Amino acid sequence: MAWLEANRTMVISDYHRAFVEAFGREDVSAANLHALRKRNGWKTGRTGHFVRGGEPHNKGKPFNPPGSEKGRFKKGNLPHNHRGAGHERVDSKDGYVFLIIDETNPHTGADTRPVLKHKYLWEKANGPVPEGHRLKCLDGDKTNCDPSNWEAIPMALAPRLNGRFGRGYDDAPAELKHTIMATAKLEHALREKKKAKV
Image (cartoon, rainbow, N blue to C red):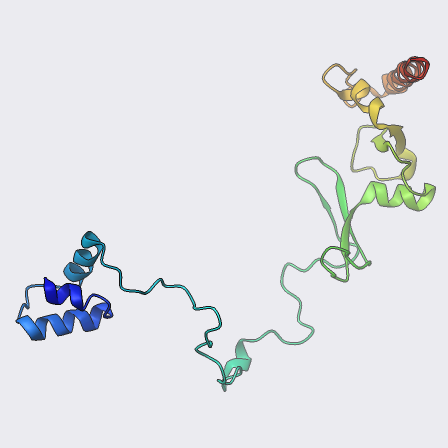
């Protein structure tokens, strides 16, 4: 045991080999010695971490070994899942249409970026959505991205249309949608006027 403790910092393979040579104990495996070190809390001095300022093992070695070029991407090659400008997809969660446009993505630097199609087309026709407003689909079909099908409404008006206590605008028949919208706008205007008086 004294020999094992004194030589505990050796790499396990060398530790086991030296122990067998010194004591002729073929019945003891490397795993047994490793478990012994753990049970007794004997530290080897190795943490498994890279030492700060240490030299990388591959420093000075060539980066491009011969034959490695066959596994590289070819210049100009596009991945199988590439979606270029003009590609559209319908979001499975909310049902909105996303459009890939030919503009630099400010977040990733990519040549294209995804946008909500209805908002993109509406802003092209009407300018930016006013602050404190959002776009509301008038016919209930979110895939209909025609700018005339979307209206900028105040954020506070949205719960009156479809919120927990709203009037179910999206599910209402087409002939009632105009009335529901007009009623919600009137209630919203009255509420804003009362708030302004206080």
